[in-house]
Amino acid sequence: MRYGTVDVLNGIDLTAQRGEVIALLGPNGAGKTTTIEILEGFRLSSAGTVRVLGVDPARGDERWRAQIGVVLQSWRDHGRWRVRDLLSHLGDYYAPYATDQIQRPWPVDDLLAAVGLTAHANARVSRLSGGQRRRLDVAVGIVGRPELLFLDEPTVGLDPAARREFHELVHRLADLDHTTILLTTHDLAEAEKLADLIVILANGRIIARGSPDQLSRRLTTDAEIRWTCDGQRHVHATMDATGFLRDLLRDHGDGVQELEVRRANLEDAYLALVHEEETGIRTGRAERVWQQQEENR
Amino acid sequence: MNPKTTALRAGLRRGVIELRSTFTNGQDLWNYFFPTVVLLVAVFFMRGATVPGTDFSLGARTLPSALGMGLLFGGLLGLAQHLVVDREDGTLLRAKAIPNGMLGYLIGKLVLVSSVAMIGLVIQLTPGMFFLDGLRLGDPSAWLTLAWAVPLGLIATLPLGAMIGSLIENPRNMGLLVLPVMGLIAVSGIFYPIDGLPGWLQGAAQVFPLYWLGLGMRSALLPADLAAVEIGGSWRHLEMVAVLGAWAVLGLVLAPVLLRRMARRESGSRVAARREQAMQRVG
Image (cartoon, rainbow over all chains, first blue to last red; front, side, top):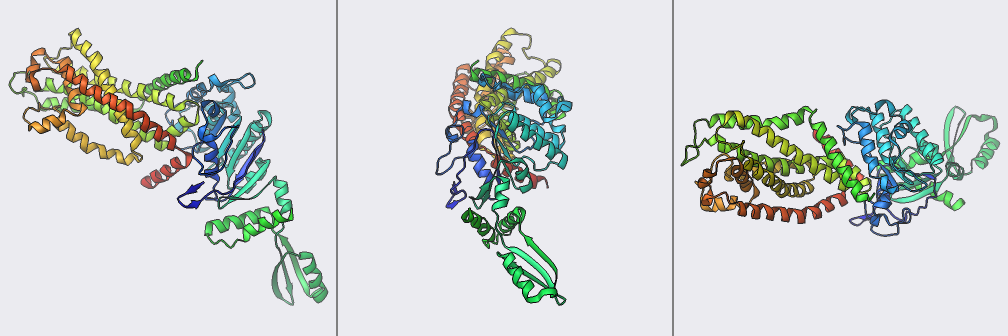
């Protein structure tokens, strides 16, 4: 994928299994939205092969479209509609695409209950709070009982309680309905909580991927060692923390006080990456961290 | 059921639901009645004036002409406005994300916009019954003419509205339309017959649909002998059908192309970019 002469996506190689939740994680400008829009069929890729449910999204027909759910960022659309009217109307389009296995659309009352909007069924959309509005966006995305659901930064602007409810809904969709879910987020904690597979994007490239466990286990960063000796503070960064400590204690013995060894965790590595992206200072440190673990594999 | 048929029906329902909501919305109610208020004020200032060369009330001639103008406003500007606003607020992207959603969306808009235009027409016509003499409101043939001229007017103007709506990306640019439309109103004989204008200007005015929309409405509602003061001394129904039909064909050929192009380009990031723009405008 390129804009002008700048490749914004490069070598994104990604395969999803049925019922899997994949999180595309990365700072702003990493290429998350571009990736998801190509998969949704809303944007053309300049090169490469894309298959979504076996079809090139650029050529996806309406039957293909009916199997896909897209949760869009909310804005002001359909403000005058009542929640129930809107869901029932949008659901109508899916009725011809029901199959023996999948009943389409999702019955409105069940759907309202699933997203927690039963009490607001007759409210006008413009009167919903931010969190309620976001639930409606999710409901619109799943009204056709999609086999594959795209969520682009679904929890932006949600308060912690609404965020938690949303996470529960994602689990329910993946576990009970075997919906395959691809979501983008720039929140590592959210990706860890929701995803079976985390794919970290930076500068339009995948720099790391794996389950949350795999990612943190594979991380081999510098450890930071702090201590005081004779009233003076010292800081030292090293890959071989154990060896350094052995030498330090042998040479200075009781003089070493307030010893602290800290190994960067997944979050530190991710934050270093975000910092690089946002300040524009590409020291390459974050990418080196991820590359090391690829080699160590 | 066939998915396209389903979407068609959903679109009809969509139009009805959106139409219903215009009856409870202050802004929409204002839009229904505002043209009538303007018209009544205009007619008030014309009291005592007559159509040149006759003793027929100029106000009574203005009412049907203004109905024609209302069709242009309703059909062309109305649909264009909806498309521009719906693109900005993400309605169109939602339609794109569901199967055959664009078809349903478009049908819904056509139902909504043409119903609103026709309701507006009836509302503007009503005071005419009480304040103006000479309109043939009791004559069935008047309603017969309206029954084909109004739909023809809408078929000529709606596709143009769809074209303009798909070309304008920023709602602020809707304002660019105001000046040309004002100019067109001035030369199209809405408020005053245009025989006094230079010949080339008369000719230019007759290229555009507005003149014919006004003429069509006049031919329906004014007494037959008023045709004598029109250009060519007749209601020229044949020419009217030809010109409006040509605009309709042009629109129906080009509008789908432009609508498809517009739909193809919609994506979440475009809506987000427009939202940023709108926020800056407000903030």
